Image (tube, rainbow, N blue to C red; front, side, top):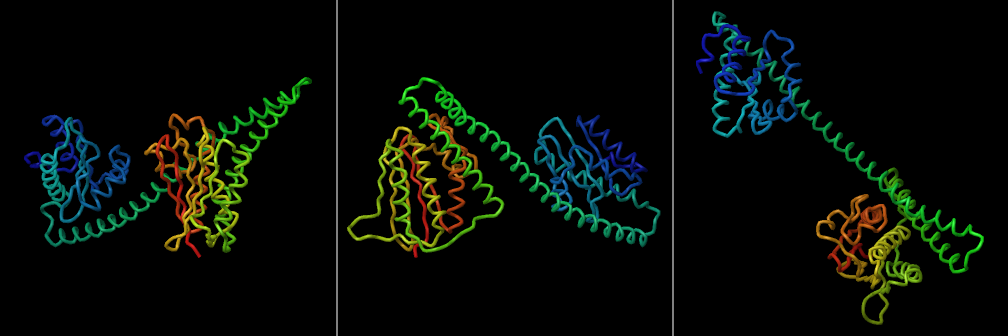
Length: 395
């Protein structure tokens, strides 16, 4: 502690402490920043320092704790009489172990006392010292309140910046996905259109070309519908027309429309056992419920390129209607299941990476289920297929 003795001026004290730690103890840097001195630029210099950030403000000025910026960078508050007089910053060549932090903290307390003594000369009366400290405490309390408010504002700005970064990331993914996915059907449409322009062409080739154009056009239409739906939900939310509807009836209509155009798959509608007709009534929007089932059936078909069963099972139990859409297709890896309802996320395992899509169908489906106060989850095993489970309140 002898480095603190017999130093008549604050600036000299700062220089002596800094040089002692660097020259004799081998520290790379040691900077002392004092708030209450004649240097009006102290706060500006501190704010522009590489180590000064919101986390430092929160740890040191609010929580009154050392701030370890990195394994070899340490900041300590210079506290005396419950006031923070400044900050001392160390940058060493080794990791700051807890024992060394404690020693440096003890030194910073002694340094703060010495700084306080230099700020209030010895020859000043004790009454004046008390008044000076009262004024300083008031200034510090105001500074602390300002820092607390500033930290909250900084936290809010950080959250807003994070949200903006996520929006920018989504926008980039959207542009990339849309550009890639739109190009593929457009190439098919343009290519088969040129075939149809030939003077001599067989009826079989005309039929095949027209089917390919129709399929590519339908794919474009689905992608455009998804984008329009996403935009509508983001800007206006869901416009619901609630009524009592039979989910079994909706599922039957959906299967009847999909089956003729997807002959590779065997469609099975399971409405329970027995001869008695069961009604699966829920309060919902008929159009939105149909869209949910269409999205899940389309997803099952898309990820079953080799065909297989697509089963829709409905059960009424414990006051709920449970709907399950199950396929025997590609399935998913364990790490993929947690992200399948994210917008623009698409599974990229070896078997599914070449399957087209924007990654919006399941996201829109989850939003729609949530809007109708339902739940949706997925059970899936790679190479064994997937099962999507939807639950609504029965009426």
